[in-house]
Amino acid sequence: MTKPSPVEVPGEVEIDISIEAPAWGDPAPLQRLFERALREAFAEADLSVVPGTELSVVLTDDAAIRELNREWRGKDKPTNVLSFPGGDEDEPPFGPLLGDIVIARETLEHEAEAEKKSFPAHLTHLFIHGLLHLFGYDHQIEEEAQEMEDAERRILARLGISDPYAETPLAGDEA
Image (spheres, rainbow, N blue to C red):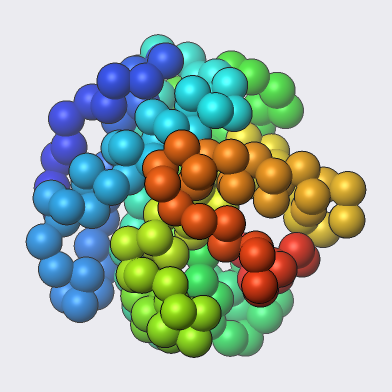
């Protein structure tokens, strides 16, 4: 596990990456990807946290995320991303423990391949999806799903990533 440097975003969010599956490889490019995505998410979605906020990103495998999905959501199958809010806040600013985003490598790879997306683009999308959950976004009902998907589209566009919902809508999916 590496200790990252603070990210320059409003509220000074520090991303702590924990790699639990060796297939994820070198954390340095992942750190840069998450930092860039975080900056654009804050800029586009007007997110707000208290100074010194920490965000945990756990990069794991299908077996581990399946356990979490079974324990916390009652679904005995792997999923692509899970989010666990760190506090009881209902409105901004959030923090100082923003929460955890857990992403499964195998599911991410399979989805990216099936949807003909690049691995980094799909990883960025899942990170942003998980991040928005930590800020109270949800997709259980159509109106909320549309709001969340629109925010994701705008953030991803800022990053030069095409609309992930153009052909495969995810409203009400796994995360």
